[in-house]
Amino acid sequence: MAWVWGALIVLAVLIIYHHLIYLPVMLLLSRWRSRQSTDTAVTAASGDWPKVAIVMCAYNESDYIEAKLANLISLDYPADKLHLYIACDGCSDDTAEKIRNWQPRLDAAGLQLTLIDAPDNRGKLYRLNQLMDLAREHETFAALTDVSALISIDALQQSVAAFADPAIGALTSQYLLATPQPGEAQYWAWQNQIRRSESALGNVMGGSGAFYIMRTALFRPLPHDTINDDFMLPMSIIEQGYQVLLNQAINSVEMAPTSDQQDQHRRERIGAGNLQQLIRCRFLLRPSLLTSAWIFMSGKGLRTLMPFILLLFLLLSFALALNGSLIATGLSIAQILGYSLALLPEIGVRAGVLVKLNYLVRGYAASLKGMVAYLCGQYRQGWQPAAALHLYQSLSTRILKRLSDLVLSTLGLLLTLPLWPLIALAIKLESPGPVFFRQLRVGQIHHHRVELFHMIKFRSMGQFAEKETGAVWASRQDPRVTRVGKFLRKTRLDELPQFLNVLRGDMSLIGPRPERPEFCGDLQNALPFYAERTAGLKPGITGLAQVNNGYDETLDDVKHKLLWDHAYSTALSSPFQWLMMDLRIIGKTAWIMMAGRGQ
Image 1 (cartoon, helix red, strand yellow):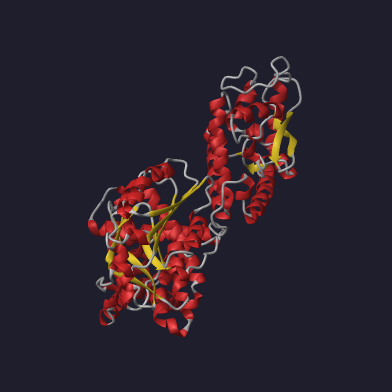
Image 2 (cartoon, one colour):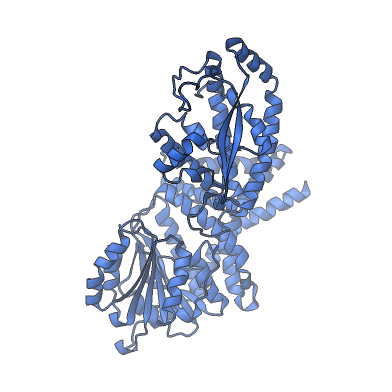
C-alpha cells in the first residue's frame, strides 16, 4: 500500500498548497512588485482621446437595458469619441424597442449607435465576433460590458490613460454585486484581491464580463465552442505578448440578482470552461510567461482539478482506513465531518463560517458536474441555434442509446417471459380473441419520410372495442377496457411485448409515446411542432411525458405531454445528460409499475 500512501501525501500537499500557501505567497510577492501605472491619473487633453467602441450583446434584457443606457450616457468621456455597438440576439421581449426609444437621448448626448436587431438567436459568442469585426474597423479600443452591469463614470478615462503604456493590451475592472447571495460577497472580495495580486505580478488571468477593455487590433475571433469568452479573449492577448491588468479605480456592479439555481448553472458552466481553458492555455508554458504560468496553474489550474483531487483524497483515505490505518481513519472522519458541516446551511443553519464552507463545497460540486458534462460531450459543440430536434443528439448519444435499448430490452424480455403465459391465460379466460394487440403507429420522422410500424401489446380491451366508435382516445374509466386489462394497464404489463418492437428497431426503450396516424394530422394542425416530437427520435415504451402524464383525454393533455417530449429531446445533446435523464425515467417507471399507478 506504499504507493497509495504516496499518492495520498501528494494530494494532501496540493490541497494545502492551493488553499493555504499559494495565496499568501502571491499576496506577499504582489506587494513587492506593485505596479502604480495601472492607477495613473488622467492627464491627457480632451483632444487626445482615442475612439472607443462600447460593445454589448443582449438577449431579453428589458429589465436592465434602460439603466445601462443611462449609465453609458453619463460616462465622463467625449461623446463624439464613443460608438455604441449593441446586438439583440433574437430577443423575444421589447429590449430592441426600448433601445430605439432611447435613440433621441443618445443623439442629444452625441453618442453614436449601431444596433443589430437579429431575429434569430445565434448565441453571445457569434454576436460578439460580429460586433468586434465592426468595431475594429473604426475604433482604437473596445470596451466589452454586460447589459446588467453598471460601470464607473470615469472607467474609460482611467482605461485610456493606462493604455499609454504600449505593453498593456487589455484592462479589466473590479467586480461587485448589488445584491449578493450568502457567501458571494466574501467570494468576490477574495477574487478581486486575487486579481489585483495577479495584475501586480504581470497578468490577470482573464477578464470580467461586466467590463473589460482591449486594443481592437489585438482581437482574434474565438472558436465557436468557447465556453468562457471573457476569460479566453484576454488570454489570447497575453498569448500575443501583451499584458492584461486590473485597474482598481474601475468598478463594475452587477445589478441582476442571482438565484441559487442560476448560480449553480453558472458555476457548472464555469467548471466546464475552466477545464477547457486548462487544455487551451498551453501557450503559458513559454519561458517568457513562467510567472503567469505559475499563477495560472497554482490558481485556476488547481481550482479546476481540485474537485477531482478532493474526491480521490477521500477515496484513498477510505481505502487505507479499511486496511486498518488509524491516521487514514482520522482523515476519513475529518473529511466526513467537514462535508457534513458544509451541508448544514442547506437545512437552515446559517452560521457565517458554515455559509462560507457551504459556498466553497457547493462551488466544487457544481464545477465537478460541469467538468464531467464537458468530458461527456456537453458544451463541445458550442452554442447551436434552435433547429430540428434530431440535431441536438450527439453521435455518441445515439450510439449509446441504441446499445442500451438492445441490452435492456433483451434483459427485460428474458426476465418477464415467465409472466407471458400467465398474462395470456388471464386474457383468454376473460374474453375471446387474440392475446396480442397490433396497431399501426407513427415512428421516427426523417427529413424526407415518416416511419410507420405495428406496435405490439397485450390486449387490454374487448376484441371489437373500436368497431362502432372508430379510433378514439382512451379515458380514465374507459368501458372498453376489460378487468384484466385494467390490471395490465395499471402495472404497465400490457406493454411488455413492445420489447420486441425495440429489438426490431421500431421503437426505443425511452422516448415520446407513439401516436396513431389517424390523430397526427389533426394534432399537428392544432399544436405547432407536434410532428417534430419524433424528429430523428424513435418513440418509446416509456418516457418523460408518460411518467408525468397519463393517457391523452383532451387537447390540453397532449399539449402538456408535447412539452415533456421536447424537453426530453433537448436532454440528448450529450451522453451525460441523456444517461441522467434515462435513469430518472427508468426509476420512476419502475415505481409506477410497482405502485400500480399506470392507466
